[in-house]
Image (cartoon, rainbow, N blue to C red; front, side, top):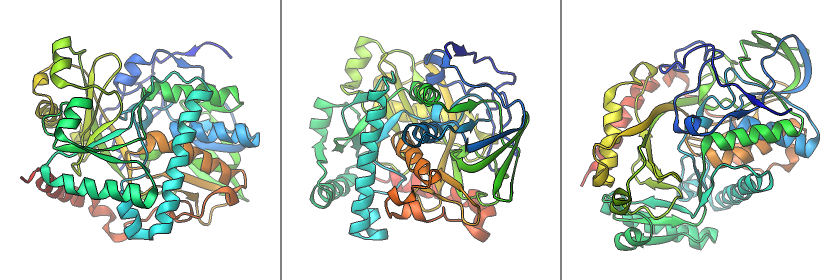
Length: 465
């Protein structure tokens, strides 16, 4: 079907939505006012809301990168035409609110931390998995002509303090010697001359794989491809209850109940706590803020010295991710509020402005064209899970990327499709596929208090001399 789906919403965007405290994400809401939505152009056609009871083979809950990749691969590799259920517009959550940075990672842990947790052989298996994932990600964009403005060139992991340089050098050596991966170290002068004149930088580790993309155009490209392959994507259709009766999943939406043999959950940080007891509190939603400047003048661009379009991140625990956009604007983001009620606190915007000015003094006080925030799905052990839901027949989920889902979500969607199709034997024997997301147990009600304390500690550690 040709044409586009109007973006006009029936309800205003809820800027204070909080997945920990709100019972529902709502339905028919407008998108967050992100740069990606503002510059993506019209979305491809979707299949509209569920309008009656249906019996289907597979339901995917969530139409972000992971859910659309799952539907795409179910159709492409197994001939299964899934029905995707989305509460609002396509890719309403993190997939249109992120920083558009694709890095060769999955979760928050470095390679050295993989080795500490699981040993060298498992770490090598995880490295092979993310390497394959990056090839898949690039291939989807290339083979399906997804016009998401990819800017390849590697990832620059920038030392914001001098004491970070020996740590980066050690990690780069590990990548080269243990994983055969061509990371290298740039000193401050090399970084300034070849990549970016970040005034905080003391040098950087460069990884060969890093691509910046237009977040919404990537999602809308996945939507187009999935539907061309036969998937159905039902917007404005939140799952209000989930029952499993005689092995069949009954998913009630405002327009009717969808009965499915199998269910794949791909909701990231936007799943209401009541979606299913097996999913409750398995992730910790963390808020991230982003701003985009007006277009820079030639003099401002020269002063900033940003010579690459690929991903830039600094080495803070509460890291900043930033980049030069193809149209000459600069985007920067970082962690911010702890609760939805505090999301619009001007202090968070001021903090991002200050960070931008520290890195690029010429941009101090620059006008902004966009400012937004969104929820990131952080797991309690900092690694994602793509796995079956124990005790529930033919039910699976993929969540917990910790802000590194732009690239890996394509592979996660493919892996969960393999599980749904009964091809779990094709999935590597790695911890992220065969263990549940950990639960915090009795500590769950106190997580945000702990988060507040950790943010204070991380800030102190990050900014020490």
